[in-house]
Amino acid sequence: MDLMQLNKERKHISEISSKNDGQKVTVAGWIYDQRDLGKIRFIVLRDISGQIQVTALKDKSSKEIFDAMAKTSRESVVVITGEVKKSDKAPEGREIIPESFEVLANAAQPLPIDVSDFSKTELPKRLDYRFLDLHRRRAQAIFKVQSTLLQAYREFMVSNETIEANFPAIIGSSSEGGTELFSANYFEKKAFLSQSCQLYKQMLACSMEKVFAVFTVWRAEKHNTVRHLNESRQFDYEQAFANEFVVMDVLARCVQHMVKRVVELNAEELKLLDVKLNIPGVKYIPFSEVAEIMKKEKIHMGADDLSGEAEKKLGEMYPDTIVFVHDWPLSGKPFYIMPKGEKLSCGFDAIYQGMEISSGGQRVHLPELLTERLKAKGLNPKDFTSYIDSFRYGAPPHAGWGMGVERLTMLILGLTNIREAVLFPRDRDRLTP
Image 1 (cartoon, rainbow, N blue to C red):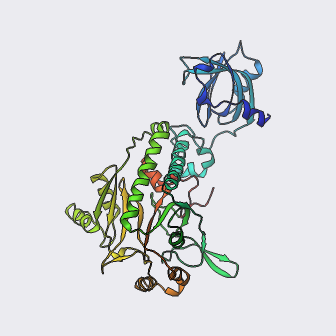
Image 2: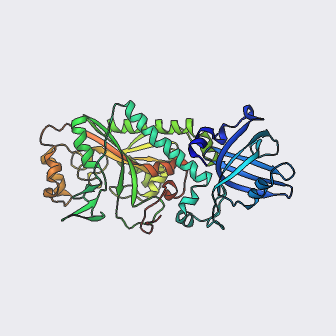
Image 3: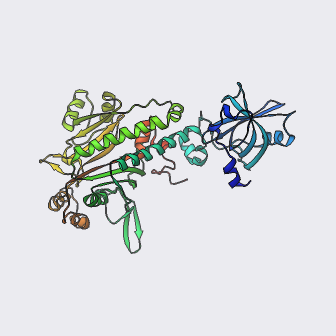
């Protein structure tokens, strides 16, 4: 097979319409299903855009094609050229009568997992064979939506006159002061995989004012939940001359734009996944008010943090709404969040569909206060010397946030396990494929 020629001649299945009736087309893809009725053989061919029935008649098709259709296994890769015909009995209303049938790759049998759209294979086993699980239309739909979210995020940020940046994934000390880091040998030094690009995006915002990134983070926390990963991606944003309310507004408009683009571009995927998606509204609530609400509802939450149950309740009370919980207790936020008086902070969390999607706030840009906050958190300012020094030479007030790519995908699509929103998940037990 001349692949250059194939790319010139090939037609995606979704492009085939009544205009092609009676015409010869070339299609390529995977055998999704097959049936043998003796004198008639059918296969359903699937490519990234859709599927179509291919029908061979024993008396009218060549013996070579008729036999090949029977011998070629499901999920094998084939190229077929044939005439398009209208057919009321075909699944998509049209079929191809093959004139040539070429196998590019045979799929070994039996398949280790069920790759139908109604697969009963459990998620752990599907992840063991993720490369094959990605043949499923439902799996593909999830990542088509995620692709739209990534592109829409960049669209919004570019329209917001924001600079895209890349930041180091290898760091010399904790970004956030925690101890759950993956360590690595970096020549003669000890290094860590980054928990966050937090410190670096602050440094850049203090020069270039508005910056964004899609950044991979690693957290060595020994959890086994349906909402956490040990390697994940984040949408990150930082803005100079801003407080927490400025960047909360940016976050709200960004998520609204992203959801709008999914509604516009992924109607077929949403239908396949049985998701009705609405552009979210926005609600602002102080932490103290949320605490009162949860007390009345008899829902436990910490003195300086929301519980999962509290987040879920907010989702029930304010469906299809981004709920910004602000004026967060200072004790519940990292050292780099600006204090607001003695007990409160300029930090916030954003809750959407009953789960946190983002955390952020105004940052400490004053070196003396930053040193004080590090000590208050039990951290050694000497470990953050270069970070503190970056604010000694004209650093404006600034604020920002981070938002999980997989978490947002999970919530938008109503997935029950975040691992479904990751191509190749990394958690406490999984390092392959």
